[in-house]
Length: 304
Image (cartoon, rainbow, N blue to C red; front, top):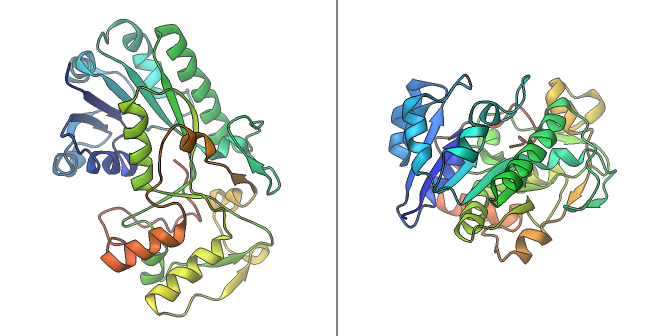
């Protein structure tokens, strides 16, 4: 059967996945807002409405034909919304399904005081959102066991790409250089999220994989590098202790770790942008830093 993909939560990462659709496979995806239907169609996604309360006839029809299922919706107060309404459907009513991909976050590791972590490291999430993600990971892996399907859990680091990067923040005046000694973050360009998904889906590979770059780096270094490429002065350094930050932004700095991507490389994936410098060089040279995606000025690194 021809491959057919279904994306629950066709947002920033979902659109990047579709942009890398070299085979022209059919991709359907959901949004909570009918106003976004045209944007999804323009991106190459057959749009469907999903608010977590139920599937509806159109989604059910699409799922029965789906061969590869991707979930890019965060769990909420009542758990994973897709599992809540579609868990039994996935097991009982999707005869063509071969593979499931779940987009999670490296936040499930919590704080490791700057030490390296990999997929075998202890998960000790700090925030409620990361605790919920870890629970959802386990539920999706268990569903795969029950259904006899490979489930790939992709633990993503801070996402950036067109429209969501330090160039955008510098250009709109929201960039900051927060200084917290020894603090590092990993990052991942959305093209490599898409690439990893296509790689794993195309081979029906399951397991847990960190999808992250090679180089955990201090966040202020990234801003400085972007400013250098733009030939503009970087913003002044601000001590973390005195910075005005939202509770969510401040919570990101409470977790410090270096995340290994050795497992996804061992599975055969080659990163398009193995570090932020290679990605920034490309985005600046081509103008690809601009885009329809939103600026990510709300937090230092957006997860998932």
